[in-house]
Length: 558
RNA sequence: GCGCCCGUAGCUCAGUUGGAUAGAGCGUCUGACUACGAAUCAGAAGGCCGGGGGUUCAAAUCCCUCCGGGCGCACCA
Image (cartoon, rainbow, N blue to C red; front, side, top):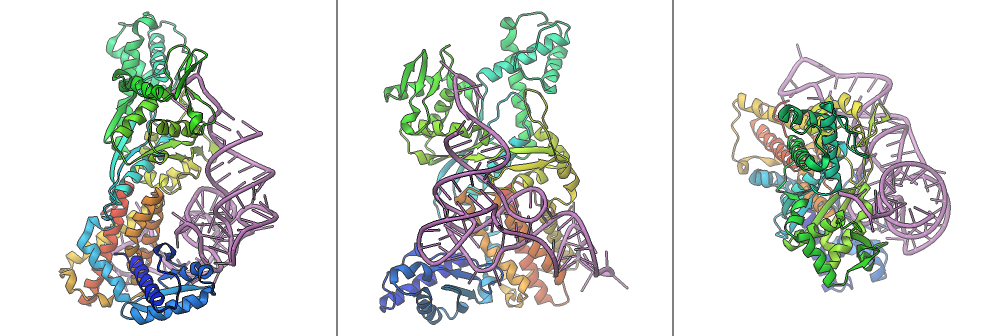
């Protein structure tokens, strides 16, 4: 149990006693007992605002209530609490005895890789869908953000005890894909000296030429001069397969893996699209107008109704997306999380409408909108357009600054904060990027471990270690942060905000470096050495655990 | 014009879901290696939390309004 929970229970108990004895009228209410960690300028481990919350109900000044609670707390919990103080408008500040904090070292030691994981058994089944880029070109930098965040979020939810399924929705159907095939087809003909104009709005990136060249190398003039009608399907299928492979590889070298790659085309083949529309029609959420088929999304709060089948008989993207989400919902997940770029946020209302139209509560789907990545080079904006072929790929960035640095960079910002990615800065900073600050701390501790081994220090059974020797302020600070880790997991998971872990890591690394600089870990005093090795070993474990959630490696040397 | 997001130190960003005197990194200035890794540490300077109203014991945080920026507003995806 983390210490803040312990504190909360103590407060509730004190409240109950006070209430039993008529000193406080209202009965204990866990929701009113907020335990927070005060700012560093406040000399206390925890603070609670319960007295201020109670003041209006009790009709008494908050300090008076705080005084009452303080009396009971001091009476009941003398063994655990160093002191209880009143402050400001009605805070109750609590400080634990140091040996309370030292317990966390034994917990980390015992739980190892599992420390921080919450096993309170909420165990929801959650599906996270992210990246899901069109297979019409390599991933660009912006996709890197969704990849990093989606992956870290999935890991985080797993650490919080949920069962997570990661999925990539491959839009391998529809107009854009055909356009890709047409672009490659045209380029192929051009390469073989047969002038075919590029399609309007076609894809023009260098990768289009490369794909065409490879086809020319492999199939020679087999398709030269043939009409698009005749062989477009071949070009489309081929470039689709190749691009999908490239994307998989880009993600894989970025350290991102999915449990499933879901094909949009398969929804048409299996009849799932038709079935989904039939269901909506049966519920009277579809109607025909002006030759098109419309989804009555306004019924669920959307601005206007949306077309699912166009006048020309083709289905829109929404049709297959409804079928896709219907499939996901039918798989029985407790929660679906979609991570989308801000350029798609206008789409959320109709998707939420679809979920409801299919008979599920709106809350079953949670769409996280990520603000776009603005790419700059030396402060100058870099245009990113897939069709113009003028963009920096995720692969370029990963090759340039490294996977860990790129991941960490993407995870240093809140998802809804617009983000500027300066390529020159990322390159130049590659050696002073914050990620190295954290990794260095980890590597340093590994080095200490090696050093201890070389010097023949034999580690005792943790239960035998004299923890009371850990009394330096920096040591207590470290232990307090370690104790916080499970709570961090819980709060970050609940808020769906993995970026909090990066800030935690930076803070923990900072305290560690400071400690390391001030105090020797291995010394002539064997008892002290044992205690300190246990401490830094725990720090190392927690760092590794947090880094693993982020998908960043925890190197033993660098 | 309408909708969503953002506006916090020179720059890039946090801010424990409404709490105490608002924080960090980079950059700038000053210092610390004959010891476990200096990819490190210590100190200094730097703020009308975009402006204005409101809600209450308490607002960077919630509501309204204006200003500025991003993204949407397709029978594209």
